[in-house]
Structure formats: C-alpha cells, structure tokens
Length: 168
Image (cartoon, rainbow, N blue to C red; front, side, top):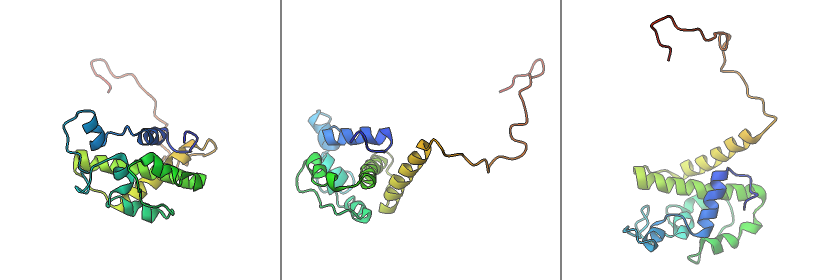
C-alpha cells in the first residue's frame, strides 16, 4: 500500500480506512460521540467504513463505472473486501482504486459538512484529475510552459516607496 504512486494524503487515508479508524458514524458512536449511526447519504444502513466506501447504494455506481471486476462487499470488513481483489489489480488500477476511495470519502464529507451533493461523474473526475495532476507534479523532467506570461512580466523591480507612504 505504501508504495502505491498516489498523493501521500491518499495513502494516509487508505491506511486509516483499512485500519478502521475513519470517523464514520459507527466509529464515532463506538467512541461515545452522540451521533446517529445511519449513513448520511442513503439514510438506510449504519455508516461503517465498508458501507461508506463500498456498500452504499449511492456509492456503488462509482465502482461500476470504474470498470473493475469488483463484487459488492459481503462482509462488514473493509479490509477483507479490499484483500479479496487488490492483488489482482495492476499498479494503475490500484492507484485508481485508492483515488476513488479518497474521492468518495471527500464527497461524503462535502455532504455532511456543506450539504453539497456530487454526481458519480464528479467523483470519478475528482479522483482522476487529482491523480493526474499529482503525477504531473512529480515529473522532474516536465518543463512548465510559460504561455501565460507576457513580455512585460518580470521586467519591473521593487522600488522604495516615497517618504510617508507604505508599499503593501
């Protein structure tokens, strides 16, 4: 897991998900936080890590559109569900899997904290775009294109402001 080429925040997120320590409603209730255990998205089942990232009827279309041959979780263990297929995925698929889990959690948080719903296409786009941007940022041989610069950029230099004036 730690060698997967995804942003560090996504690896950390996956470690938390696989360790069962994401602050889902079930985990919060276990820690004596007075919250309803029901999933805030579907309002049908308790929100465990497995339900939140893989089992919720509002999340499952993301997995179907990703195109992997992944079965719906049959147990309440996210770790067991992931172990059932993760070794069958190639490096690219594993990266996309991690990113989609992260994007689903991000969407869940957008709904819980800002009441912003997101579509399946938005979730997939955020996962893919974030991964592509991160990979591009890691490319040490990439030369940024200065197409947004004009001939005047970089020409001016700092000058001391006149007496009695501040330069901000």
